[in-house]
Image (cartoon, rainbow, N blue to C red; front, top):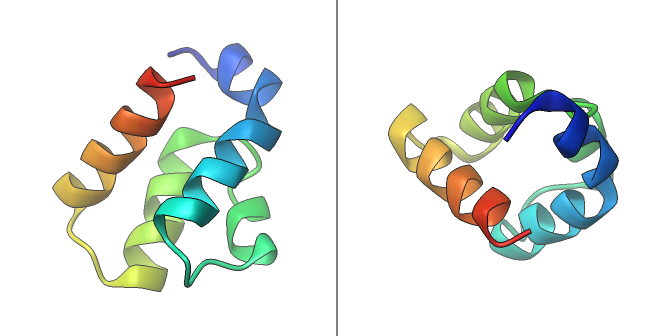
Length: 65
């Protein structure tokens, strides 16, 4: 999914991420500002998950949108 689509659907993606990872705050999610790489980095740092785990979750969320 390209950056324009991610930015356009950011509100929906934020909701899905917060649902998948209840520990995330709005500030955590907003830090990424629609950038997938930043979003994955924030998730890794905040949740202590591996890059592959985070990428799989983000792929699943993006594929459902």
